[in-house]
Length: 280
Image (cartoon, rainbow, N blue to C red; front, side, top):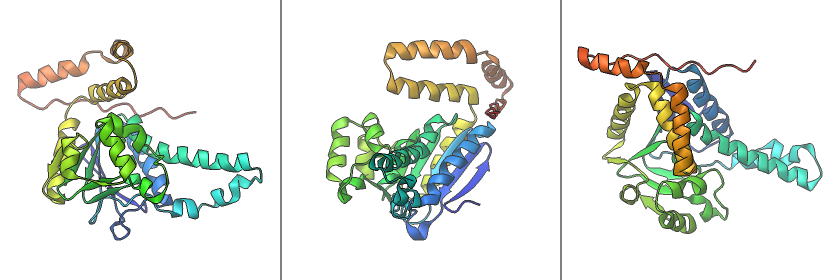
């Protein structure tokens, strides 16, 4: 069983909860190992069609636990080398490992929805900005905490936030370290909806995930793939990309099932995605 998470899967919707409320769900070393493994396993199966990330306790997460750095034997040993360049390369590799732990949200074939209550601080902002969509409670706030402790955020916030909200607003909060309250978050587009409390938040986001899961998983995967590609490429390149995707993936079977189900007054039924092939 994971140390940092609880997982439930129902009706093809996975619900992954940060589960260390007494410690404000800080991101200890086990967190960075467990999260990408769980998400990759869900994606590998092909049976999950949406993932909700939520949390427990008063706050979503207080962010990075310093034990990730202070308790790392790899860092303290410099990877076993006395040469400074090689020792510094260990930090370079560690930061990329942390980044990859959240980038798995983007590479997963299903949408990832983040449900935030209370504080979403530091590394937690890195985490939720990698999700497909964000929702929060009225008492939620977001804080790019790194600037408040004398460092530059390095696990995804600075790369993703200005593609989610206006750049000037992203810069203001990145430079000041101020808290962005829920109302400001919805005004600038960081979150999609605000709910009155944690229970309503979970009910609402799980309902959205359920509606996503009722659609063709192949069409949802294609939609996510193209949206992510378009974010990072020109319109022309993105149009060519979707043309290539459609020429391979769109065979019409799921569309036929949609029309047939509508004519028969029932919910459509779609095959799961194939499991990701194992590397031999």
